[in-house]
Length: 221
Image 1 (cartoon, rainbow, N blue to C red):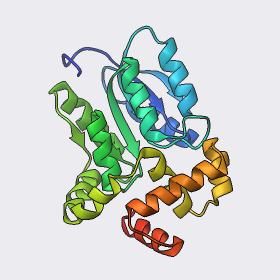
Image 2 (image 1 turned 180 degrees about the vertical axis):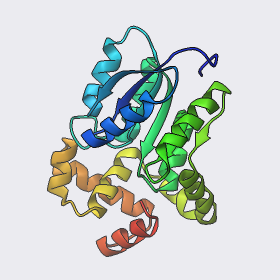
Image 3 (image 1 turned 135 degrees about the horizontal axis):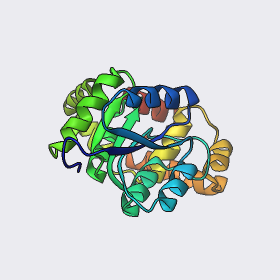
Image 4 (image 1 turned 120 degrees about the horizontal axis):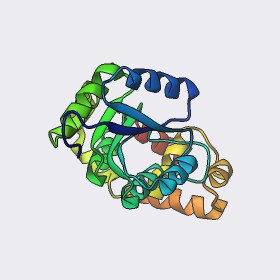
């Protein structure tokens, strides 16, 4: 956690969209005692930057999903960042609306969840203030999503039975990718991807592809 109101806070930013990086850098420039140490546009470059850093970052402000590079498994990327010991606080800045995913990020040890649908300038300031008081910060839209999920706890518990790779394959399949395309994206064989999809469907008690797509979309993943 951060200590002291007057201490300079070192932040790194990571997002695939150049316009987002520019916007975040501009916002942070207007906050007192903030130093933007680095900007990254992929999971790979983010990890390389952290490994080169001798001084731990106070905050990493990063998107959750990166489509480019080998770090396609977003949860694994977050775990690797935490395990590196190079970041004191992780702020996830995301458009993810799946409450199960958001709750899992909190379980991993993420300090702050910020929705791209909220006023990011205001929320970053509030989040930094919160971590100085050893508090977790959720932006308003994130709070709403998690509160709504309480009504659908049965579905959430079923989805929790899926492994991270099964969940990832299902999400990509529902987005419209074919098994071959998923295999190429994840650097796995088509047979391995098919097994992950089959296992996920068995755990969800789903027997055909239409049911799978309908079910997952109903969870707003």
